[in-house]
Picture 1 (tube, rainbow, N blue to C red):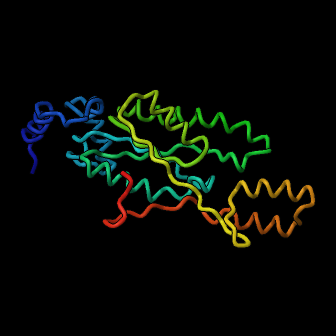
Picture 2: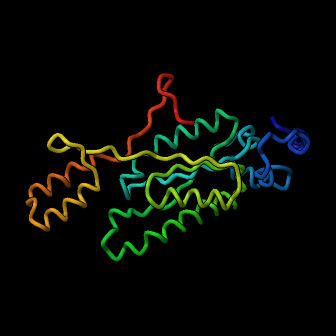
Picture 3: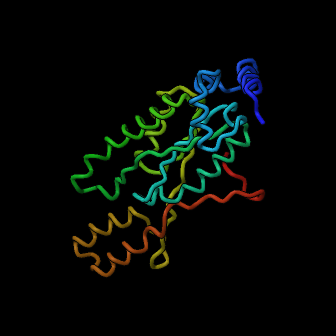
Length: 225
């Protein structure tokens, strides 16, 4: 049974213990009796005292079902979290938005594309700043999420790593590799009568076979971390 003196000793130990290397900012939310409510919220998320004492690393994920460029990166996020734990840190995953240029292109929605880059940067910067994270890993895979994540890193000036989520694999038609650019070009060929609607449909249906490939990590195939 924990007594009041035991609890007081734990608080005293928190104040007197040596701060973990790399915990240069998150200590503001974890140290001392006055931060008991903060630690309570963290423990509600399953964190142990050891987790709370470690450096905090934000893991910004652009995984979503808006675009295939980002739909397959969730397994990579899990590998990043394992990597942070292995290095002695505590990861905190959070998401941000994504707009697909390829899907919004040619519509009024395209006006939101460039704006989305700023929203991505702002959202990542806001979370890392507000939560006092000591570092950041961002994983992104499309036109605006890549620069948005890196803009946030430049503004924050905390130790950061950017990981590219991967490229959509090419499709195949008539024995040749094709990809999304092939479809755009095929639209022009269809409009000039060079190909018919059946060929355009075949190109459309084979150009993008799936989202970015998930990364598998093992002793044989090491993670890029």
